[in-house]
Image (cartoon, rainbow, N blue to C red; front, side, top):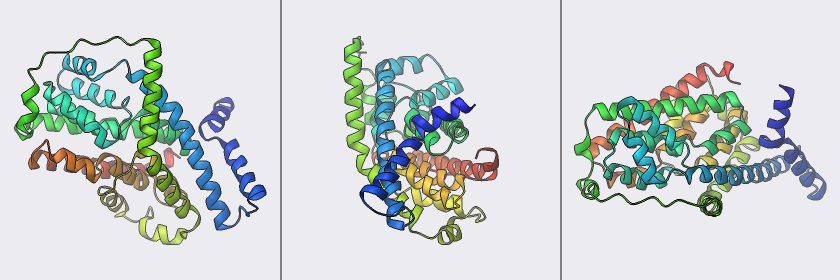
Length: 335
């Protein structure tokens, strides 16, 4: 157990990096770590460096794994199964795709046009931005493994249940007709990649993701540093404290219109929890931002009709609120 804690603190939490940054701020910048400026600088520099190190390593690993599952192969795998099993596989395959909600929609369109049931594609669409492997490792680095693994379970569960309900409602007629026009296209032969190809693809994946999320990471860490060291704890707990029954629904509804990657919202969740906000409230905000961002809803509106869009949003919002309330209720067992 002690050895596991050592590995966790060294490679995930990077406590050595936090100490190094503290020395940089105090000794080189000559700013006291006890001051708001010094504490904020330490939080900002440490979190930015840690997130980008972990992000690069994890996206490289995930992209390498993903190179074995191009969309056509994924479609073939999912096409072998039906019902709950297909929805579960769709959600699990979503966890190895490091995409934000907007990036997942083209794959959603491709899977639907290829003939996969819309319930399965919605399971994929929900889990892909919500429960990718990189975000799980980052959650463990910020909080702990119990919270990270619980987050995976409830995220996959939300994706599977939502997809299953959409399947049962028989809403295929709610998908734009042009999506089905390409369903009769011949299958393309899969090209086998060499080891070098996979490495180059993984490096390109790192560059692509970092280019997409770097600004959101900086903004998210900046907001986190502000919450962590400037905004009074009494103010935050008065609005979003664990004792406030409305904290989870409010955090969810506030998060929906925003657009950010999960890597940018994690530092905000970390800062909120450190100020006395319930873990469920912080995670609800994070999940709403990543799974139901306004740009992704606008994009989805182009390919599905209002009824299906409303069902999708309603299921995900309801699920996020329930998950947040459960996390707050059982936080004692996770922290």
